[in-house]
Length: 171
Image (tube, rainbow, N blue to C red; front, side, top):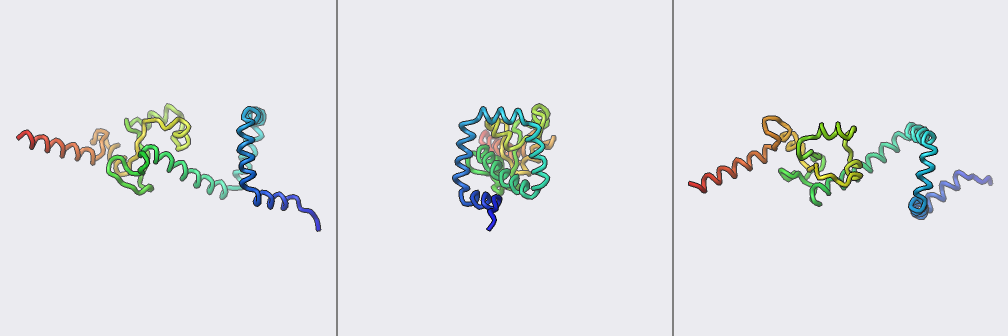
C-alpha cells in the first residue's frame, strides 16, 4: 500500500478540527507581531493567492459570505434594537423587512466621508456608532420622502394624534 500524504492530512484535519482550531487561535494570539510582519512583507503574494483561491472556490466563498453576513447582521441588528430585533418605529419583526437607517438622514454624506459602503463589519469595527437605528423598509422609505420632513408616516400620525389629544384637553 502506497502512503498518500494528501489523504492522510485531510483525514487528520477532519478528526482533529477543534484541536487545530484552538492551536491556530493560540498561535495567532501569541504571534501577532510576527504575523503582521509576514503579511506586510508578503502582501503581493497573499493578494495573488486570495485572488486565485476566490476564483477557484466561488461557491465556497459565496457560502462563507452568506453565513458570516447573516451572523454580523444579527449582531448589529441586536445592538441597534437593544436585543429585540424590530423596527424602532412600527415594531415590525420580520428580519427580511428590516434595514439600518441613518438617524439624522445623512447617509449619503456619511458614505462619502468614509469612502465606501457601510457594512456590518465596518459598524462593528467602529464600535457601533450611535448614528443608526433599525427601521423596516416602509418606515425607512417614508422617512426619506421630502414631504415627510425626515419623519416616518407613523411618527407624523402619532404626533398629530398627540396634538389633537392636547387640544381636546385644553377645551
